[in-house]
Image (tube, rainbow, N blue to C red; front, side, top):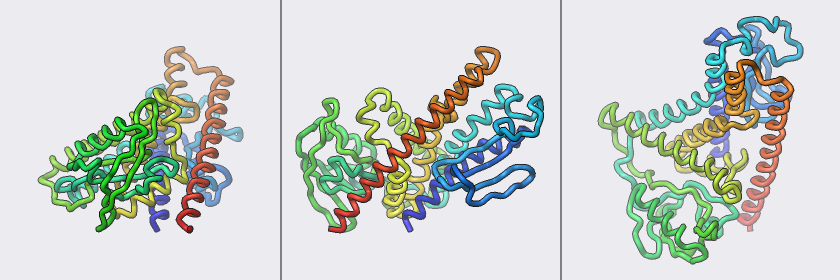
Length: 360
């Protein structure tokens, strides 16, 4: 059930992203040819008002297609309602609408949680483990998603973001040094030993940590507090996500190992959903922001890459030559498909190994 919940959330996030592109185009009177969730052959397909809506076999994303992109287009290429013939600001809105939709969704999800589920009275003691990498020190020591770390080397961590910063500082300053942690899992407490691996002179354990905010909830003191809390959570998640992608440029070898494919993302979602609706809300907001930031990167085939071509067109005063656009797009397709395949194989093999070990 947890896996189905995380798959449903992923499907919804992809749908919202593509709906952003679709609505930005249709509200401006731009002609749309197709709206697809997934890639490859269509499993379900229906045409409505000249637009083909489809669910396709490979659930790795989605796309909105336009008439001028099709070889069987019967519309005149001079039609002012084609995307390619619209002013640059209108095209920029269509391209960026998916990213904006995912960011808006993340904020709305956090706002909805604060409105209907309330706000935490205060973080519970300790640091919450959100997820662990199966081949890193945290997993080897026995940490798992949902665990709470209460102390390190006998020192109480306290509560909130200060507790997270204290634990992270201790880990970074202890590469190759074994630390003793006090861990709470459910109603049981235990001690375990963990040895951070050395990475560019600093320690790391391969776990995502956050304040332990899974305690009791209270009603908000008015709409102002709800908005303030939602803004704080949203900006914190956005900042951490951007920092993670920034690491690909500043520390590629280390950060690349933390990239997750679809299988790993679903596994993380299943782990978080075990914490109940609050965990699923966190997963939805986190992945929605990740989708937004990922698509905003200036890489071929992503929304950011299309904006780069649009900016080049604005500077040149005319479109980028079609052969260069084609090379740009094809290189991006090969890069993203290749990366997806590698991540799926890696994550599936790691998941299988973990399941075998658990079976023994």
